[in-house]
Structure formats: C-alpha cells, structure tokens
Length: 336
View 1 (cartoon, rainbow, N blue to C red):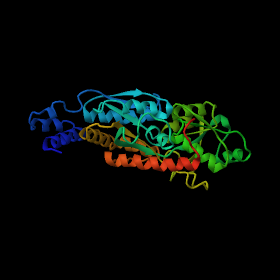
View 2: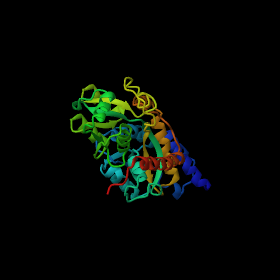
View 3: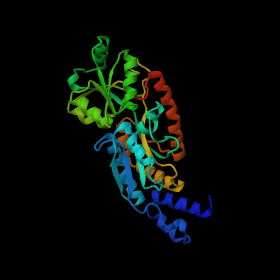
View 4: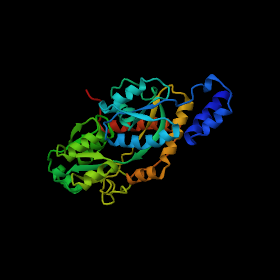
C-alpha cells in the first residue's frame, strides 16, 4: 500500500471510529484525486432479504442508526424477501462495488442455502466482500398455542403416536429448515416442512394456528409468548436463554448435538475498496459496543463478537463447509 493509500485508509477508519477526526486529518493531507471523493458522500443502500417488520429488519435498523452517526450518512433500507434470501443477495452481488450498496442478512443466502447446493446466481465465496459480523444467537422451538402442545413431552407423545406435525421454516435451506430437519431426526418422525418468505412469516402462521411448530429467536418471540399465541418448547442452544429461563435446552432433554448457532452480518459486493470495507467494519464495531445493543443481544440469548473483515470471511467459509456436511447427514437437498 503506497503512503497516500495508507493515509486514506486511516482517514476512513478514523471517520467511523471518531466522527470529525477524519476531517481534521484531511486538512493535513495534500490535495489528490485519492481524496477527492471521501467515503461516504451520499446515502448507503442497505438490502435486507426479509420483509419489513422481520427480526432481520429490526436488527438491521438497530445497527444502522449508530452506523449513520459514525459515517455521517443515512442508511436507506430496502426489503427484498423470497427464495431463501437469495433475491436480495443477488441484487447486492451485482451492485457497483463502491460501498453504497450493502447486504444485511442471516446465514441463508450466503452460507446455508449455497452449502446444500441450492441454485444461486452468484458465488457466495467470490461475489461478496464480508464486512462485519452482526448479532449471533440460538433459536428456540415453539408451538402454536392452538396446537394444544404445552411442553416438549407433549410433542414427544404426539410424535410417538405418529400424529401429523408441521414445521414452518424461513425457506428451503434456511437455519429453520435445518432446525426442523434436526428435530425430525431426533424424534424419528417425518415432519411436514412448510417454507415461507422469511422466518417471521412462519412465526405468524404458527401463532395463527396454521402450523404446529416453527423456530425463532427470543427477541422476536417474547411478545407472542406474552400474548399466549405461541408456547416455547426447547432451545437449540448451549445454555438457556436469559429471557426464557424456564425453557430447557435440547441437551437437558437428553438430545445432545442439537445446538444451532445462527448469525447475521454485513456484506458488500466483491471488489469494494479495502479502505471502505474497513471503515464500514469500524462503524459496525462501534455500533455494537453500545450498552443498549449489548443488552439487546444478551437478552436474546446471544453474544456480541467484534470481528475483522478477514476473520468474518473465514467464518463464512468454515460455516459453509460445516453446513454442507450437516445437510448431507440430514438429507437436505436442493429443491427440484
């Protein structure tokens, strides 16, 4: 990296970490085309491949607000649900690599769906520049209140009696699809898998009585639990979720190996300048260090974990291989 590029790199990073500092540094820098258009100078488009009001939308907005303050430009959120999140991911993969179009998503379009061989019109490894890890947590199995299930023991009894059971997912190859497949194998039954355009849609269908089971994260479940519309049965986690202390983990129920780590994150199109990716990573890290954000994640049974772009890229690579193996074990295949 030449000296001028190095100065630009740190100016962008300072802008994200200490708003105003970059402008002070700019006064000390020579006039140069490298600094003619400091980033960012206009709003940033943030594509969320789920519906408005979904858990992904909520977390994207929680992170976007402090990132706007750090970068000095607004984030404009665009929802593109459908096809296990791949429609939104494709739009970002094809966007100009200038830092003004980003993807905020869970694992489906970048990790789990491609891992099972799902047809996507992009390469999850080569067509994205991973920017920053977002919240990570473990999902919870829930039943619709109208199902009559009040505990995991009730579910086991129905499974033993071979009663019909349905399980809603956020799409083929989503984390919810894996969760339902893991549950079916553990119970030794066939579950009717019902895919939706996002996990929030499946959750609403379960609450409305159209599904027996689905999965969700504590932060999106609490209101429906309080309203008596869904019943939490078990957590796909290493430990009980903070807001749901009475809900056992599958390990406690005698079913080890049912942990299901889920994460979300920011991605840019491949070819986005490294200095821009670093500036965005620094802004995201700063946003995730606020006490309010940390409490939200911990209350959801998750954790905050700052990670460099390179480390996040490696995490994606490792997870694709892990989910590929698990998909083979569970017999999850691409849709015909």
